[in-house]
Length: 218
Image 1 (tube, rainbow, N blue to C red):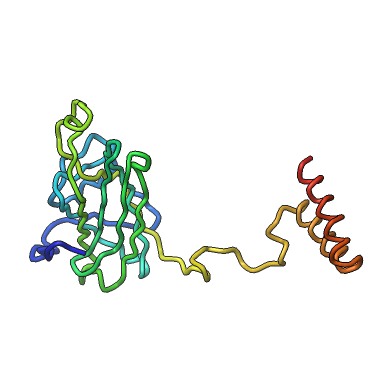
Image 2 (image 1 turned 45 degrees about the vertical axis):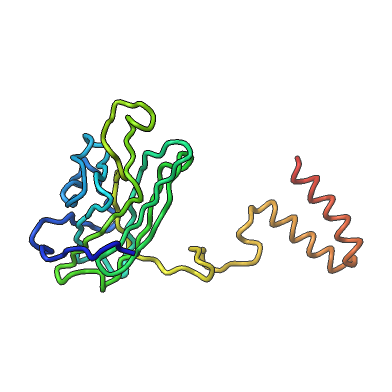
């Protein structure tokens, strides 16, 4: 959760980054408009790094965005060996998500679900991005960059929230039990099912299991 309340007294008094459905926004496409406190100037058209343990990203959802909405942050971290970088993203009232980066996993897409109650009257939302530590590439690995870096934001995109089927996966419409398999495999399994019914469980399963293995190894 937030280490201290976010000051929103100036909410609505500054420009926010307007987000539209399925329109990714990168630095070259104006992402910097949403960078408030806690950011270094963008590194060309590549990304923007946080320069503080707490940074604010200000966005506005277009009127066509239905709620709840799925926002995705494309993030990158500088993490030397044997180190980790934890990132927490919140609104002024609640935590949205958290992620941990490592040298083996320096980049990720962090999903956030934005609810109607997270928005102001003008559909604005201040996202607080908190990092566990700031790391200097010069000190850590002797690189030329002497800045103390938190997390880099490369892209942001918003999508309409899609309902999930049981288990949390987006599944295709229900079909026959074997229709989701490749046709060749489905035909073999149908033969196994038919033979099991006609020849008895043990004899049929042994015979057709061998046939299935031979066909799959061809």
